[in-house]
Structures are given as C-alpha cells and as structure tokens.
Length: 174
Image 1 (spheres, rainbow, N blue to C red):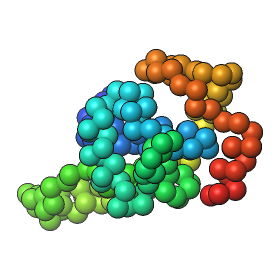
Image 2: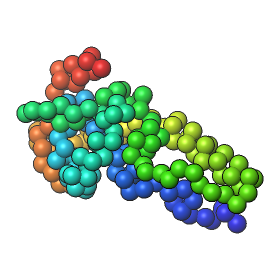
Image 3: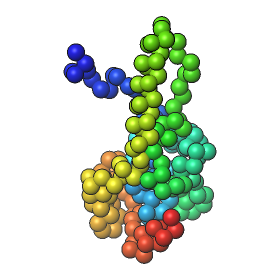
Image 4: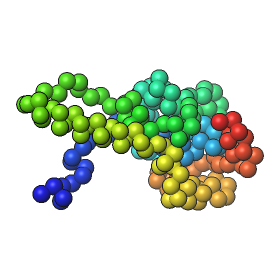
C-alpha cells in the first residue's frame, strides 16, 4: 500500500529548512575561495536577501556559518563541512510545535520512534557528504575554469574563483 506513496508527503521539511540547507551548501561549495557575499547567495539560491539574512541569524548561534564584515567580506563555514549535519541546519531554522497530542500511548511511541529515526538519519548526513559528491565538484570546476564565470543556476557573473595559492591557504587555515 505505501510502496507507491510519495516520499515528499510522508515527512515534510519546510521551505525555510530547504533554503537554509541550500544556502549552507552554496557557502560550503565556495568556501575554499573565501567569504561568499550575501547578495550572491540570495541570487544563486533565488531567496530574497532579507530572508537569507533571517535564516543566517538562526544559523550563526549554532556555529554553522560566520559573517566577515567589510570589503571582500561575506559568509563562510564556521566549522569544517564534515562537522555540520543536515539535521543540525534544520534544527537551527525549523520552527516546530512541541508537544504533539496522540490518541494513544502506542501511537505516540510509534511516531516518536519514527521521528527519532528520521532525526538520526538527518544527523548522519554532513554538508561535506553533499558537496563532495562528484556532480557537485564537476559543477564547481566548470564554473572556475577560466576568468569570470556565470552561475548556471541564476546567471550572476562573478570573477570570484580560486587561485592555486588561495585554495592552499584556505585549506591550511581550517
């Protein structure tokens, strides 16, 4: 009966949660070349700048991202991508109602266990797991091939890109 169920309807992540994960992945993909400007994240992820700013206000206290002010500033990962889980990002931004009422103790036990298993699964997926996938790395390499590049998602033209010494310095600094 459930084999044909749409997995998107079984467990729902809010748009805020999806946007937060997408924005953090964008930062992690570009982290080697320095801070990512808020405007770039906004345009590339198709999220308003003010909404990205609100999401980042929730992520900063968790030590997921950090902002660097001034010219050349922006956002970067506060910790290595391998230490940040998708579950942690969702926990930082999701607004969940606490205290669901179940019709019986059995129903509560079943659903609490299911939700705990889903939370454990989300905690087991790190940002590094997602950005280190070959498809993500190939996409990034195509962007940086030569000179200014245009984002394949949003069309923003930028000259941000790694120089060999810049990438080596960024890796040593972490």
